[in-house]
Length: 127
Image 1 (cartoon, rainbow, N blue to C red):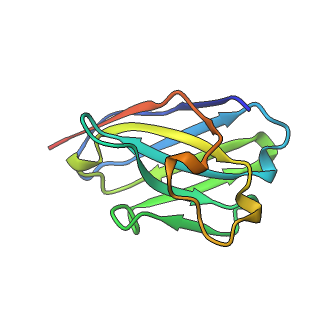
Image 2: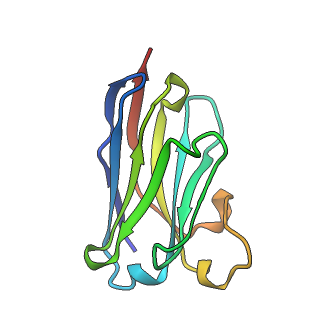
Image 3: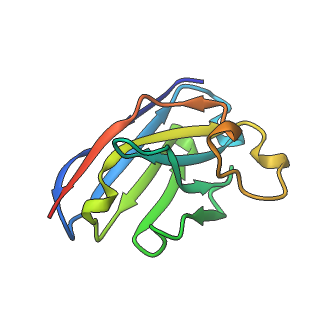
């Protein structure tokens, strides 16, 4: 599975961005997908996840109510709509695929639970 994230950029605090992640796999619709982010000098952290159908989502407390994850299985693409951005949202954002997500009893939120990763896209929020 190849994942390519794009859509990052520079935005002022309070602004919005939409990230996209294009997947190469025809089986994209079978995977739970997630977004993570990594700020300079910090560990990569979970942001949001969405189940295979798009009918269920899960968010980190720090972004809940501001970010929205979605997917379009017809074109094998994952999205992250980010609103009310804050300087602390500045990071490289990564999309990832969890091949075992359909079999889990709880959401995967750790880096090790995801099998494939995109290359990351930089988001910078200025104050």
